[in-house]
Structures are given as C-alpha cells and as structure tokens.
Figure 1 (cartoon, rainbow, N blue to C red):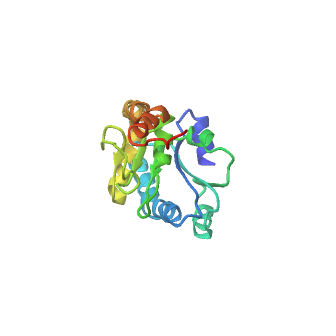
Figure 2 (cartoon, rainbow, N blue to C red):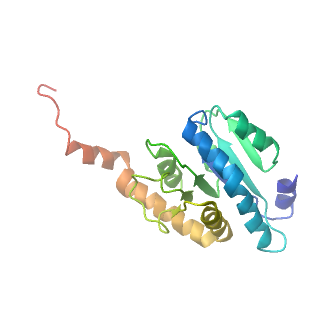
Figure 3 (cartoon, rainbow, N blue to C red):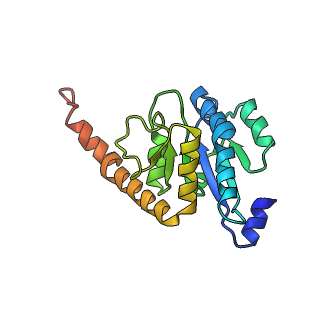
Amino acid sequence: NSATQGASQGKKDFCLVYSGLMGWHPNNDAALYFLRKIFPLVKQRMASEGDEPAPVRFMIVGKDPSPAVTALAQKDPAVIVTGFVEDVRPLVEQADVVVVPLRIGSGTRLKILEAMAMGRPVVSTSIGCEGLDVTDGEHLFIADNPDVFSERVVRLLRDPVLRERMSQAGRRLVEEKYDWKKIEESLAGRVTRPQGE
C-alpha cells in the first residue's frame, strides 16, 4: 500500500490518532466529523505541498465504533479503526498529532492530558479542551472549523520543530498543573476530613 511504499522510500508515514469510547455519542460524532470534513482537507493540503507527499494515516482507537465509522473506514485504506484495545498508550505514542474534534458533550478532558503527558502535540476544538488551562498556539492548537483544523494539523506535520516545541509545552503544563500530586495538594486545601479519620 501507499503507506508502506512511502516508508520504504524513506518518507515519513504520518499518523493522526483519536481515542475514546466510540460507543459514546460525542466521540462517535467527533470521529465522523473528522472523517467527513477534516481528514479529506488534511490529505488535500499534504498533497498540494511538495511534489511527493508523505502518506497520512488516521487511527480511531476505542471500543464500540459505530457502523457509520466502520463503513467510512472501509472506503479509505488510510483509516484504521482498532475497536477495543487493552491499553491505548502504545497507539497514542505512534501519533505525530493527536486530534480531538469534539463538537458536543461534556466530561473530563483526560484524552488531551494523557496525550500531553506522553509528549504528543494536540489539535482540538474549543469544546474538546473546555475547562483545561491551555493556551492556543502554545500548549496545543484550537480550531473550530474544518479548514482551520486541517491547516493546524498539516502545520504540525510539516514542522518537526513546532511539533517538538508544542509537545514539550504540553508536557510541562501537565507536570506543573495536572500531575496527581498537584491535584491532591489543590484538593487538600478545599476538602476537610471528617472528625475521627
């Protein structure tokens, strides 16, 4: 396939990863949104920049992918749907960019913190990183429409220095603000133990 050919010619085979419980509607919507609206633009931009673009794969990691996601993936050999995996970390480690194209839903933003802790650069929607103390362009890129989202992804893929800088900034942020010890210290100031414990 083209990914293998690219690798055999010494070209970098880029990998984008989105992970989460795919049976949860917001994650399913995010995966479909990326597949339908953003990934085609990423491939277009990569093809228009440079004579022989490096191939880009998109890996959807998580339990219970919907039939719609699976059907779209079957039409595109650059899309990999893993289904359930015991440990997402080895797959996230393969990512050149972690994408978080969430448009709906609430909850914890652990997938972004996990990616940052592993030194992976992130492109997210505003909803995807809601509630995190992050700065656009420093810790990650924030993009809320397909054109800008795809442009930010390609910018990171094309610029290894920017990828490294953003990876380091994200990792530092997690260590300084979201490390479990820091969270415990922050909570300790607000929570008092019941008498007798």
